[in-house]
Image (cartoon, rainbow, N blue to C red):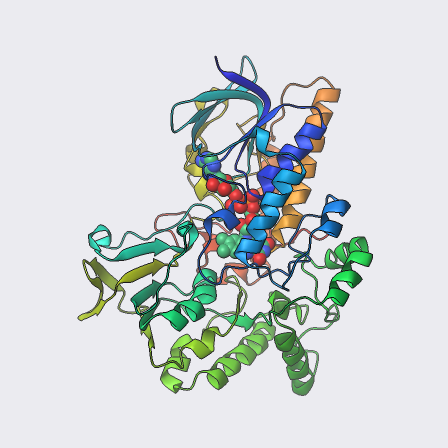
Length: 512
Ligand SMILES: Cc1cc2nc3c(=O)[nH]c(=O)nc-3n(C[C@H](O)[C@H](O)[C@H](O)COP(=O)(O)OP(=O)(O)OC[C@H]3O[C@@H](n4cnc5c(N)ncnc54)[C@H](O)[C@@H]3O)c2cc1C
């Protein structure tokens, strides 16, 4: 017998868990199908050394339940992966979610039947269930990307991907390690791997901008101050399009409207405070190339100051616009390259030619290593959705509908796919924001929509082509107004060969 639910939700990260909680409160039946053997999504999979959030813990957490946010105690300014995973598990227990979450279940296909207005969802194991609504909480950064290097499977040492890290952890003590990639996950893990490894090679294709996290333990006083006024704290943070707040004043000026000394003072204050709000120093850093260059040059000078070998410093210094790729937040990343046991290998002009049984080859040099860490990121925003064979009205496939790039209405739905919702889907603010804020907005919108349909006797909803076209045009027009599309980022799909180049997130943010 096929299991029937009002709502089938795919994924049990922060999006899937909150969606389940909301639909239950509407009195709807639901089932969450999750590939991992536990909840937490990103924080279940990404257990690499140094993994932590880069939005402050007191902000990177749910706000739908004041009791939850009052009770939960974050211990550090930026929580570690184990602490965030513990929080996710606490939420699952506190709201009694586990009974409707089926783990170890990867969804392979979903098909809409117009006559019965139902989705049939098939798992990789061949089991089926049906739902009136299908909600994809599959995550923007959950489909690991491992480039297809020649000889990849011939490596006889230990290969790891940061997003599929072994649960028991990895001890690199005394080992020769190669890390491929210098994005966020690499920048968090490299300083810690370097403390253990006998020799670390970092293979860098593109240098990344990174600012210090200035992480520290939270004091009882600052936690109390936030908890006393949590709603006001959230409201203040939502004044920023990213919904990421800072103790620095909300910017009002162009970087070009103030003197050089004043600009340096503002950047220095933000550098010292640490974190992503560095890019909020002036109103035009992501709009004007000249304004952007002042911030970029400030960070470049910091890199030159920290890294002792000028040649290494030069290779670590990005030449592009700052912020058009995700800004990284680090603890001791650049200083790690002052260690005699750490070598930066530039693979921008001579790429990794092959992976061998003993390591990696770049040009005519071979690097023997015991372990390779693929810090090569994700097939972002669309990867997890398109891994599933999703068939909408008249049998049309999502893969086909999105062949030239994803097209959605509000990042929430797509033409041809009735009763199908994507949480933080392409065309929504998602990865450019504090994602838990964006997730809560989407979940609440979807739940309100389901309640409306039920209360008004409708059995289906689908975006209209006009609304979708207008939204896609709007998303593109706003992106084109900024510097975001100016570099080859995963926002554009540029890290995955053959992926259409479309700027996927909605730049105007989720601030309320
Ligand atoms: C290392 C790292 C650090 C991050 N730090 C921050 C941060 O500081 N601030 C921030 O705002 N965001 C951050 N993010 C983004 C982060 O992904 C989101 O904040 C948030 O956790 C996403 O929650 P989600 O539930 O939407 O997706 P996820 O947490 O990715 O969960 C999706 C779930 O869906 C499951 N799934 C996918 N496909 C299938 C399938 N076919 N069948 C069954 N299950 C499936 C996956 O197994 C996964 O458990 C970070 C991401 C990474 C990778």
